[in-house]
Image (cartoon, rainbow, N blue to C red):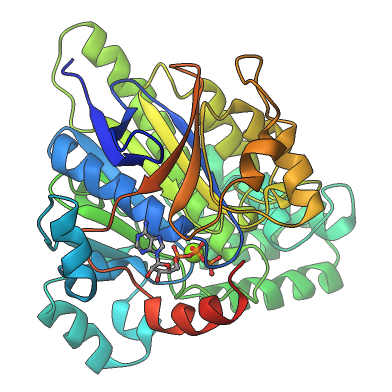
Length: 402
Ligand SMILES: Nc1ncnc2c1ncn2[C@@H]1O[C@H](COP(=O)(O)OP(=O)(O)OP(=O)(O)O)[C@@H](O)[C@H]1O
Ligand SMILES: [Mg+2]
């Protein structure tokens, strides 16, 4: 395999170019206080990956803020900085993947048109009721699997799983109504919940084939901002299904590769912004178990993960401890400094706290790399493509920064 080295910035002291080695699979943790440059840095890594891994790796950004579609345009607002860094501004091919019908998701045809005029390819991700296990259906509705509603729901879905390759919410309803052991009040309560689920708008007769939706020639932006954050766990549900299917598929493909056979899904890089929403500390989430498994077992099937958050203390510590590369921007709250400090490694001269204190400016980051056992302060390079949400953030950032 060819060497992949991502040019992420310059060393603060020596001005040498700073690289991240990404030849094998990696688990990257990006953190920093609000407005310190996390999402921007995540974009830099993805730009580098695309430049070097186009056609060879699937690149996915799970985007709960709806800001990464802007990578389709060149970074004109910082064009001087980009030039000074010896780079060219450039927009990248972006495929925006929305769960369900784009028109229904955005609720505005002009937005969809505008995205497409800008060059963004907009695609739907459809989910089948079969994609969720019986446990996941119960979890989604907050049902204990040992109370009456949980038992009935679990039984209905489990029976369908045994007998069908695909099924719909209406099939679950039919199965529930046939269940002579379930009380009518239990069935009615579940009917209400399942009817609400039908309105989420991303269930369909068949689920989308992963190789149809994720392109090797695009940066794949999974827009989770269009999924109702208020309805419990829906964003987590979508990410769980995507991660689970990619994981299973890659494990299967990996076996084919071992026998020298062709594969349609090569290695995968998944970047998750605002990751505390998906892998929270000390509370369950639908996708948490899957993402922890992704970092723990992903090395063999070639699965890499990048997670970004403002709050290291709010992210699951098991996931954090698996990360082999940290890019820490400025952090000021004690809880977060302490959570990060627990990741201090034996090869460091001091603890992480000490290093973090020395960071001063936006775009500055501490790069702690377990592979090379090195700790460096770097200036993250400017983005070649446009960074989304900048204007709104600029205002808050200039008020609250450091
Ligand atoms: N390396 C950099 N070079 C130039 N500008 C940068 C750099 N990093 C960040 N910025 C600027 O700082 C602003 C804030 O960055 P960004 O949106 O990445 O912050 P954030 O840490 O993700 O904030 P939030 O917690 O609100 O999500 C950006 O709009 C961008 O203009
Ligand atoms: Mg951000």
